[in-house]
Length: 168
Image (cartoon, rainbow, N blue to C red; front, side, top):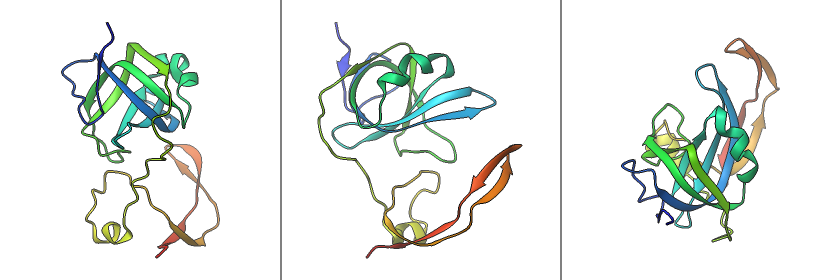
């Protein structure tokens, strides 16, 4: 029997048998010395609620090809834990984690929305927004610095500074 269908606003960690229909908004691979390489994703349901998801290194190869940015998928059986950290990609109280029994199925699109939640520049400047949650912004780039080669965590990396202004 299929798991209970739920919206992201309703999922809670008291069970793993949830079934959600979501759009893959963002996907990136991340490497840390603690966890190795993980697949990180941001999903949104048709109501526009977003959630961060982690696929641990031993499961990445199983799911990476079925989680294409822009596609809608049905996801069954996953773990949830409290979201935390300095740079959270969503404001959802929980973070989704794929487990060995997670299944992903292609789904018909529910919406063509990009599900951006654009933050107002005034709220950013005033400090009204939570500084630990990343926000979407749109504006005009008015200054771009030279690309700097730096070292971060004993690895070479590049830094680019730019200045944006509100488009209004």
